[in-house]
Each structure stands twice: as structure tokens, then as C-alpha cells.
Picture 1 (cartoon, one colour):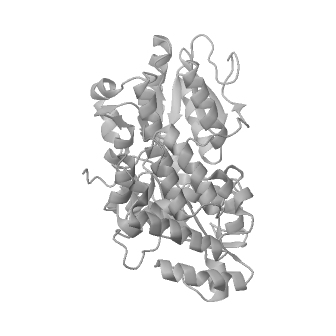
Picture 2 (cartoon, rainbow, N blue to C red; picture 1 turned 90 degrees about the horizontal axis):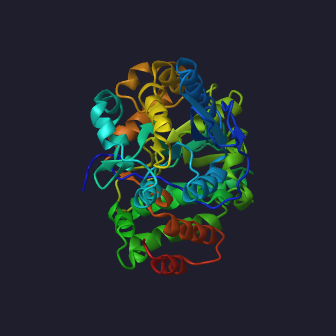
Picture 3 (tube, rainbow, N blue to C red; picture 1 turned 120 degrees about the horizontal axis):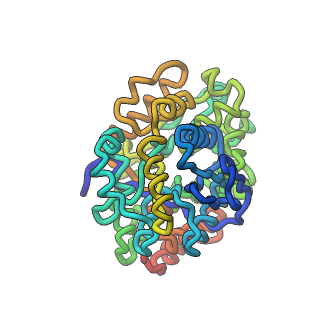
Length: 440
């Protein structure tokens, strides 16, 4: 096993959603949404501030410095993008640059010859690779070859809490699962939802299971699932984790109506910073959004954070993390040589420039650049140091399941997770359903 703390992480959430909310930005002269005109390379990015603004800024700066080799950027909401990109790639209409989470989805692109091998390019540009976290590359690597450019920020999943609400009920953030469950009636009795959750998005529910499986049984539980071992979903630690999350649902641990809340709308974050929910399990990337949308919630010191609680008697290491080691950009094999040249120039000279790094740090993020911790200062420094330490000191790192698995099994898993959280199937039924899904 590779003991690199992030080496087991791979990414591609493939929830099938209606393609809504695309907006063309920095796309002067394009022939339509997502398409590039002559002399341009196209790139598809995700919406959501502050990340969207930082992504657009890199494109604008690159275009200003490269008048003869422009990038045309189009932005999509998260779930809409997952549908649009798979459709476009499958129809040989992909953008030049494909934003990806790596892992199973990237492996699928590689298997179908839809993205270029970048290994030799990195060898010819050693300064590009040496600048970045070494731990960002495993999720971009398939069978020993690099197929995507790591970029942007590292984003572990964090247990956030509202300090004011904890003070109101006289409680401390939970360090064990039993403490977590004991807090549920305390907050419910005070008229406060214990946990915010955007259950409609499904992958948000999944984060709970990722931690519970690992805290209960250690990394080998999902390793066996990812390897396609027979009946791996029926591991006793898996059944225990599935049972625990249904215990939390039955105890009214999540906000009423959580299954109708979507993560794209940031309503789950609003519940936390508006004081309607005490805690939220979510990605570190939400820190910047809450800072931007939550008034003085973040800047006033009311946002707290901890690691996911340990499980008493569990085999997992309580420092094990879950989350994204980076974002990734792949190069479409269908692009022209001119478009590929523009894209590779962007990879080398447009991403994680000094201005880009400063922008990510100012937003409260931790960009994947060696030595970036020297830039942490001001009110965001404590959170950034927590993220940096979580990413670099964890003994192991859990791959996000819907991104580690291939698209077909990932979609079946998300469907079953939705049923698990609605209590319409039992833990044993969930395991049986998933054991029956082909792993490839």
C-alpha cells in the first residue's frame, strides 16, 4: 500500500442531474456555449464563489498575456456539469480542457482514449510538477501515467459547527460517536437542527458513510469494495456504519426536509451560518462561501471546525481524512494541436501564478503549492493551518467513493445511498444491492 496521505484519493462524482445553469464567461468570439472559435481553446469550469471568480481571473490574465492563443471559458453548476461533460466527451464534442475530479471518471476517459497522456510533458517541464504537492498527483495517475494537471486547492471534509449555538446549549463539539448522538436531543430540544445536510445532492450524504466505514473498520473496508472483492459491502464494519447513519436519521439528527435541500444552492451552509443548524459535515471549500455569504459569521469568529469523531472500539484511525487533494484539468484527445498548445501553455503559465496563489489564500483556501503555509496570516490562518495539517499529517486518506468507483457503480451507489437515508432500505438491503452491481 502507498502510505502517501492523499495517494488513495480519486475523484469523479457522477450524479445524473438535469443540465441547468450554464453561463458563458470570457468567451468572446466563441461559436456557442462551451465551443471555441478559430485560434481558441475551450475550457469548462464550475460555478460558485469565490472559486468561480478565481478561475475566471486565471483565464482573463492568461488571455491578456497571450493575445494569439486565447482560452474560451464556460461555467456550469456542479451537478449540471457532471451530465454535460459526460455527454460532450462521449459525443467527441469535449472542450479542449476538461475539469475533472480524477479517479474513476478519469480512468474511464483514459480507457476510452478520450484524454491525452501528460507524463512526458511533465517530464519536460519539471518545474511545474516540483512546485505542486506530491500528494496531488496520485488521483491524476492511471497505471503509472499522469493524465491530468493538478490545480487549485486541497479540500478535506470537515465537521463544522456554530460556536454560538454550542454556547447556547452549554455543549462542546463531539469527539466520539456516542458524544455526537448524545448531542442530537440536546439541540432538538432547543429547537435547533443538530446537523445541516443537503440530501438532495446525495454525495453530501455519502460523506457520512465514508467516515463511518473508515472509523469503524479502517481503510481496508473500502479498499476491498474499490477492488471489486465479492460481497465487500457486507463487511461487518460496513453494516455497522450503515446502521449508525440510519440511527442518526431516526433520531432526527438532520434538519427537517434535508432530502429536498440541494448543495448547489448553498442552502445547507446557510442553515449553519444563520443559526438554524448546529453542525455540518462538508468540504473545506465551503469556508470561502460561508465567509462570503454569511455576514460576520466567519469573520466574527463564530465558525468552528473539528475532525470527524472517533468510534468507540472502531479499528479506524481518527486522524484519517476524507476529501479532495486538488482539482484536475485533463486535455481532450479530440482537440487540435493548436488548441492543445494553448492549453498546455495555460497549464504551465496560467495556473497557480503568484496572483492566483494569493487569490486562493485570500479566499481562505489552501492552494496545492509547496511552502504555501508561509502565506497564512490574518483571520483565516487558523482554518488554513487546520486544513494544511489535515492534508499533510493524516496517516491515510479516504477516496471519495463516487469518484473512486467507475461511473456505473458510482451512480448505483448514490441511488442506494438516497434510499438508505430515506429509510426505505435496510443496511443489509443496501449491501446486497451494491454487492450485485458489477465493479467495472
